[in-house]
Image (cartoon, rainbow over all chains, first blue to last red; front, side, top):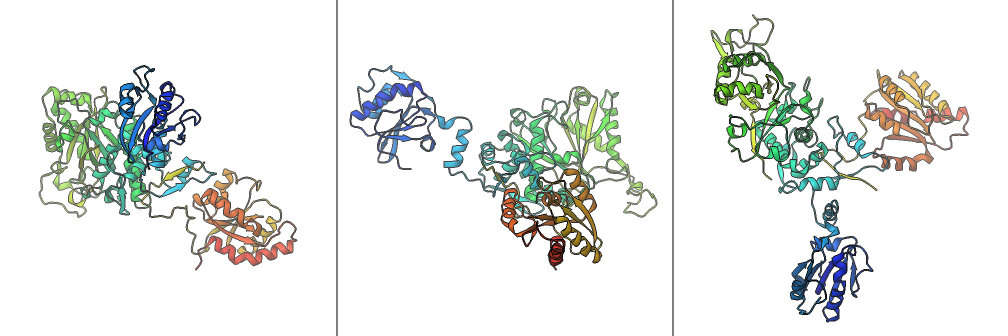
Length: 475
Length: 92
Length: 73
């Protein structure tokens, strides 16, 4: 955009300071300096000769005007200096007119520019700002409701979506400094390029706020890591889906829940972040039930499963255990079935509580199956207190649980026919139910309830299946 | 005013919604004939019914209350439960 | 056409039959709802046809009607 030479002023009539300085602009013009006034509301308002109707706010946007009046000096087509609001000394310096505005008070603040009013800024950016959000555009047919349209396109997990308009996606993308066309990975099963823009579009549909986007991006990056084996996980006949556990300052910043009903409904950040990841699986990757997704039952958790850890306990956090210091935020993705509850309202010391948890742990997947799934145990505050009061660290508890979850090697196999041939070790004694490092402990839950939640993972793990993956959250 | 949405998918499918796949053969299938209730349409459909039946195709007949509105949902549900493919006639 | 679209969404493929004059309206409606089902256009007018004429119309249309509901070989 070619700037007019001389003095530019941007004003609106609906601003007392702009009204105040109108005679001053006339004075500058009378002194022989070329003056161009851009007016944001009433084209008849300014009294100078050269007036530009900027009701469309294109010039105000391109000049990056936040306050009116703004005075700008242009030399050789380039901006040299600007003054915000009315300040006599600045205006005199800018124009070189030493007696300018002598009759006016020394200074007056301006008003907000119309180009930065809420909602307007995004629209101007989209119209004039060379914003690139790589995605096909679809027009909702005139006769159709936009929420129904999203259902009809097959984008939905069964619940209503927030229609991903250009403005909503643009606002969402303000939540990250990642460029929209940055590729995070290839989404299975279709190996489609998953860009930051595609994540943002699905995050809009999920109902995320822009400030959640960095967490969603980290979760998608983690899930697309080959070690997580997302393709296998989305396609399996088993129950599991991805589960996202969030650590670090971002939890509080975006209002996540790690207290009562932590694994349930009600918290926007928890629910929409988990949902956004699943919508990426569905829409970008193409993983859908009864197509690539062959899960016999699925689980309500496959709508989205995400929560924050309670970090106000004596234990190290999951993030710390996995290499990210407490001061930085991280997500860890696990494979996860729905939660199984363990009630122990009697144990006041660690040993019997470990025994209670171990009883259920030994039976997950099948009571005579070892070395299948990993497990995440969400230890509630009341159970946590039992360990804390005895000075047991997370490692102490995990070690005790490993020792308490050995199952009889003679009896392994899944059939009801105990004599059926199977790959049974001879005279094996007992075998560990879980591989080394296969028991993960996190703290969360409401203050009342002497319970913990056991969340088994996918039956395929390690090199044959999935491993948990951690990613730092970057803004 | 048109609402423009950004495509959340991997963009491997065409933009416009595609009709679902048709069966390769009508053997063993039921064809629904839906009369939109404009005049003379019934005569047309009666003949189609007879011709299809003569070819061994199973036919079921339906009629919507008025051509001026979409078929009521209970009728849609009934048709969807009772047929494998459908022909709607005769708009003019 | 709305009915065909509704049934398509419920897993029932199909199409509709209209007379020639309906061709443009059908195209416009298809654009408006973002869906173009298979269609068959027969000779206009319809309203004043005798039974015999309607039956002949049906006979002539039979093969095309089959193409509305079955994949072409």
